[in-house]
Length: 328
Image 1 (cartoon, rainbow, N blue to C red):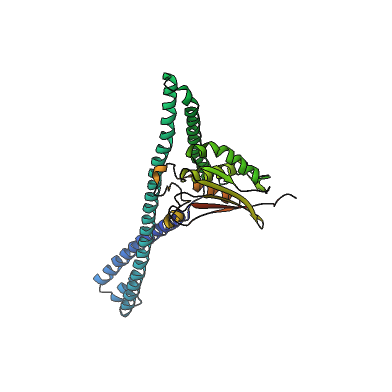
Image 2: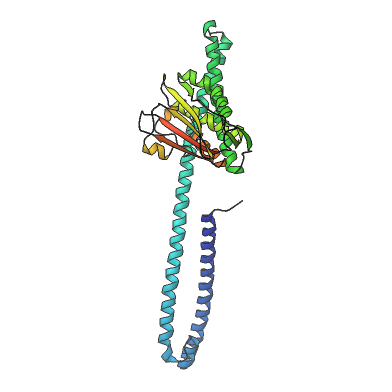
């Protein structure tokens, strides 16, 4: 398992500190022996011998020895202070990292609890109603459709969590296959159409031409569905989500634009931060969808950006992917 730079630096500082302590211990032990020899020489009134035991050629050189020792103690004290400061900084950094991890875990647990319990409660209510035969015949189909949508929402949330965990462990799960991005977009739109209809949001796709690119079909579907789900989630009933696919040079440009509540500067800064769900946390989600979009797009050698004119003015997510152009 590769070690982080901070752990390597901490190990170096610890090893250096242990070496300094060992050296000081040896130095003090040798100094104590020298003092013992010097004390015996002084007891016999042999001043020059005592000076030589302390490191000077004669008694007159003891002052120079003392000055060298003072300089040595000051310099080594400064080194120890630097080591302690570096160790303290690393410890503080580790505490902050632990606090961030704990905060992310709390956000994840809160979001996952909401994301899992809400569809499960709906599905359970539906099943209980079917068991007790409480559903009117004219509403049965609508309730069953609602249950299917909640099942898809539950599956999408679990897929995001498992895929994000896989990315962290595997660091390269995508398998590239040449294919038409326009077909991928149509497939994602068809899959998300029931979700949009239930939310009262229209999915509109602008005219597209075939765009050939090397992509992982499953990973790209996850990207597209997360972007569409995010757009539908934050759109008001009666509004439209517009999807476009164009090319710019050697890149395919996929844009998902909604007319929803939009994002302010802070939300744009954190749009792709894992476990971050913005100010409107009541909409649910574990805060992994957009983060996973960025990770998967980057794994394809592309990029994704978020833009918004402000609150209640909609948002646009733009994905840039390398492509092989349009077929002749």
